[in-house]
Length: 299
Image 1: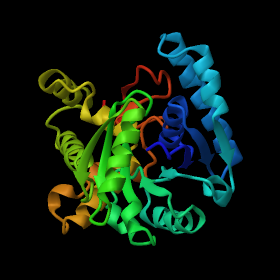
Image 2: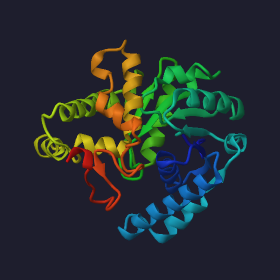
Image 3: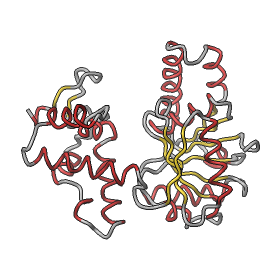
C-alpha cells in the first residue's frame, strides 16, 4: 500500500468530487478528470464548500482544507490525468457503454502497475475487466453518497481480481477512514440488489394506492428504523439512476419480474421528474430543497 500515492478520479460529478475529496483529505495526490472545464470548476467549488462544513463542525482544521485543495489537480485530457496514476477510480455516468469505453482507454494510458477501480453501483465488474489486458487488477470500489459522510465502501471482487489487489484496496479504504466490505461480483452486488427492489416495491405500493408518498416513507422510517424513506431515497439517488440499475438487474437475472422497473417510475423518468437534480420527483425541491414537500402529482 505504501506505493499507492497518485490517485486519478474519472468524472467530477457528485460521486467523483466526493471521492476526490476523501482521497485528497487523506493525504493522496489526486488528479480529477472531466471533459468539461465548467464541470471541474463546479466540482472544486463543491469540494471547497464541503470542506468548509467540516471545518465548521471541527472535524478538520483550516490548514487541512488548504492542504486538501492543493492536493487536487484538474484535467480535461484523459491521458494526462492517468499517466502517473497508481490507482484510478472511475466515477462516470452509470452507463455501461460509456464505462467500457473509458476502461479501454485507461488500460492503454495508465501505467501497467496501476489498479483499475470502478465506482459502478450495478454493472458486473467482470464485464468491465474483460475490455482490459489486466483483469487481475480490476475491482469495484463502490462508495456511498454523500461520500465524505458515508462510511461504507462496497469492495467488489470479480472472478479474476487478485487477492493482493483486494487486500490493497481494503487497506486504502481504511486509510480514508472508511469501512470496506468485500463482496463477490454479481449485478447490483449486495447494496443495490437489495435496495432497488425495495424502492421499486414502494413505487408499486404508491401506484396501486396502498399509501401516499409521505405515508410510505414514514412507515419505513418509524417502523424499520430507516433514516430516510424509500421514495425520498430514490429521489436522492436520481430516479433515472434507479431505473438504470433496475434494468441492469432485470437483464442480469434473466428478466425476473421482481427487477422490472415499476411503470410509474419509468413514466416519471420519461417526464423528466428525476428528483432534486430536476427539481421534482416524488417530492418537490424547487421552493425549499432542504425541506421538500410531496410533489403535486401525488397530492
